[in-house]
Figure 1: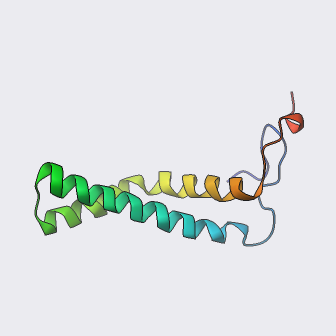
Figure 2 (figure 1 turned 135 degrees about the horizontal axis):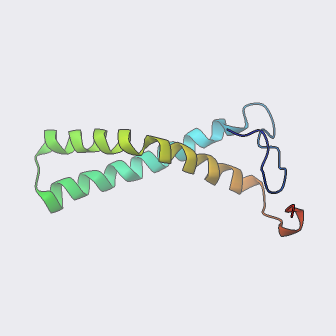
Length: 89
């Protein structure tokens, strides 16, 4: 992760352990994606319980980097507001 924003110079590490809260957001995103994978595999594809479990695990493993980055973005946007005046030209 970069130390500062390349556009506005915002320091990402606002305080020690700031992004620990992103773990809760990541958990929520993971559960939502797991439920979606289960519903898609059971209702639309018609797989059994073991196959849908494997589909959930594979989906979460493939989407793990996206979930981590998205959860950090959601977490920081809950506390830091966008200010167009601070953007460097």
